[in-house]
Amino acid sequence: MTAPARSPYSLAWRLALAAIIVRVAFAALVQGYTLVGLPESAQLRETFSLPQYLVPFLANLAASSIFVGLTVWSTTHRWLRQHNTHAVEAPRKLFGIVMILTLVSWLAVSALMIYLHSMLVLYAVQHAGAANHALTMSLLLGALAVALEALGAYLAVRIATRTVQPASDAGGPAYETRHAAWSAGLMILGWQLSVCIAMGSYLNAQSLTVGWLQYALGFLILPALLLLLCTYACLKILPRPIGAARQGRALVLGTVAFWLAQVLGVGLGFLAIRAMTWDQLIRAADSNVVAVVMLVVYVALLVLGCWVGKLALYGGSRRLATAG
Image (cartoon, rainbow, N blue to C red; front, side, top):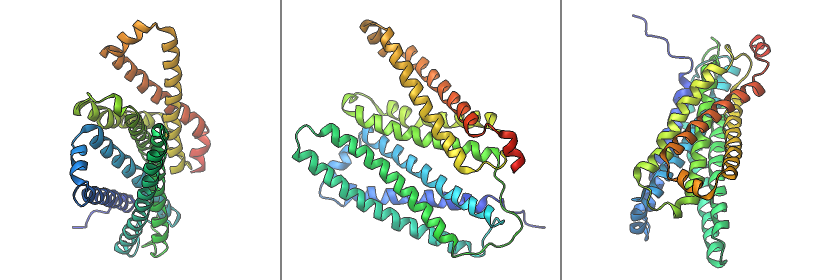
């Protein structure tokens, strides 16, 4: 009996999955050391037993893993297409070099972030009234860390692919509409988690009564549901076949869709606040119905953002299809 052929997308997918597993294991080891091996570990363990610290940490890890996984998958997939193959002669060598280089880059990023955070804490201590500025800088450092981790993963794949040869010229993997839809959806999820972390850090001191369920719902469950909805919307909206449009355009689509929804949401919220009295605002803040309506409006804005992004980036779908 002939063994079934391996999926032409399996190499890029397996390499991305391996990078995500290593990223999670690396974060677990670093966090485990801070909770066990430091003089202040007992206080840190008590802090991490609170949802306002643990759940944002998990959301940040998920966002970082998404960006790293997308980077590794898209870079590997592109290399396979360019070389008209779906395998390499030494896959273990490729995996080993990518994992080693990504670990080295993440260690360097972690050391840099520890140094910058220590400088930030020192600045906040030495300057009275600098807490808000320090919080803003901390959020910027978090965004910088994610960007550097993704850059490290990209360079790791690019360097590793120079050390291996294509296994055959049987044809590279195809890039289909479902790849673009999932890429855009995951990009929206990554941005959503990042904004959740930023807003959660800012409102943390004002939300001490919020429990595990609320944090899990806002940081994990709702973003996952938004991923599924936005991916499904992109599957219906994007052209078939996707043609010559590639991975970068899908990532830009997810970014445009998310931030367009934020801008429109802030604008609608500002108009609603201007039209309401103070008593109406207080009642609306305590109303579950208003919260559901706001969520529905936000979902609609995300879908609208996907549609607008499709028109802007895939407007010439017939030309793109013929070019492929």
